[in-house]
Image 1 (spheres, rainbow, N blue to C red):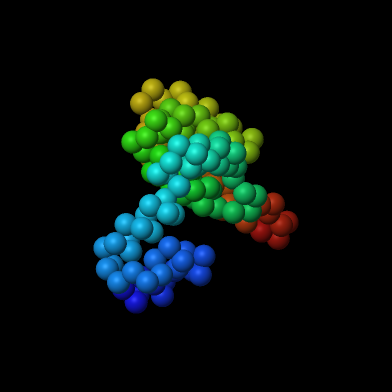
Image 2 (cartoon, rainbow, N blue to C red):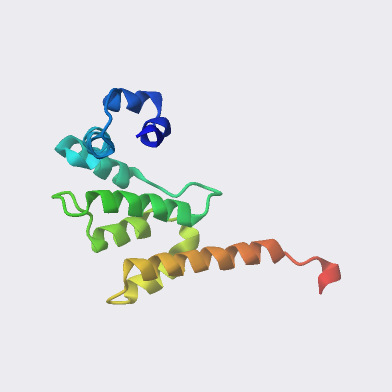
Length: 141
């Protein structure tokens, strides 16, 4: 009980103040803080999903993690994000530098979300390796 209470911010502690049953504390925290519990919360999550874009100079994996977190929260609800919608969002929000990889991925009939993420992470890694070694100095050739 003390661990749960001590782990919460002051804004959240008000919901469980005075409670002594850890199970009841968890139930109350879930009911009060899980945005996917209400129609308005789910719509807000879907809007957040729709507006998400990769952040320049941040790893793509950070962007993918945010997208996957939202899709997990929405899973099983009317606002659930299908794999097709998720892949389309990824394809349409990445910078032009990923266009060739995206075109290849789109041409594959049954590519999974995880395969898309893996391929784009690999592309990012390769691009980063090329950027670190290019252009060659005259003394390198």
